[in-house]
Length: 406
Image (cartoon, rainbow, N blue to C red; front, side):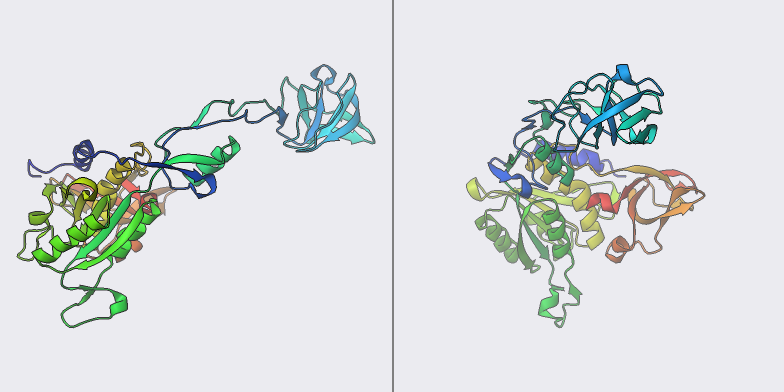
């Protein structure tokens, strides 16, 4: 690894320090809030649960009456949403269903498996302890508690929690506006059909746009840009006119005769990883039309890896998301077979997860070319092989499931 090459963590930290999160917030109906970043915390408007209630089907009774073998008169029934209107007195019990409010006077629940019913009498056939099978009022939340903090990117279960806490709307950051271009004279889109000299359909833009939309960003497809400096400058100007916050490009970041991105749009940042090796970052324009620029490698797998490991966390930072919000799940799993790599760099190989001897092992795909999107669709995870040169079967390596990156 060259001394100027950064680890992924160091590159993200360096770039994050130079990026100021966007301003602008809005109110959003909770039903539409999945994937949005909270601009303010969500607070409980009530206790959850709002009343003590039954955690099991059974009989509400007084602990003082619950000696094994005791027979109690069943005086009524309580269902969820339909409480028992009376009070449980000495020698009495109330039939309760899960979620029903605990009747006044009761302080325990005899679950139905420990009850023997005969007519309107129930016999206690199991041990009963104080508070048994009762969910206390406020067990999960108290009114005023912070339910979800500012900066949280909302998942489906967060939306459910916010609703249970009484929220109908939430304050969120506005969506990040992200434009995407691909560079390359060889590229065309499937709907345009193949053309002489254009031997490759562009998979990078659809891939990146899909990833950005899934992350909750407002996307703009700004098309394919020819391998000419004037065409790239025109594309940058168009992105400024479109008022994007970020423009992501793929291709043109190397140092070939037709690679203009690093000459025109920013600084090349070298990383100690493959596929990819690095990306270009710059700030383009001034005032309201200024935007951040990220130039990714042109090879599709390299573009995906660099986007997901480096650029996606930076976009999350720009939206005001907490740093932990978009951290992918990382595991340490054993190699199914020996592996070799060139020393000094981290080689993010596409692997399958395989059950073997009662546990998971990782099996690298035979094909590992950075131009082969098939290796992403055909794999289950990315595995970090390196920076050493040789690894034995059974050696633990860092693994990120591909589903955790989506």
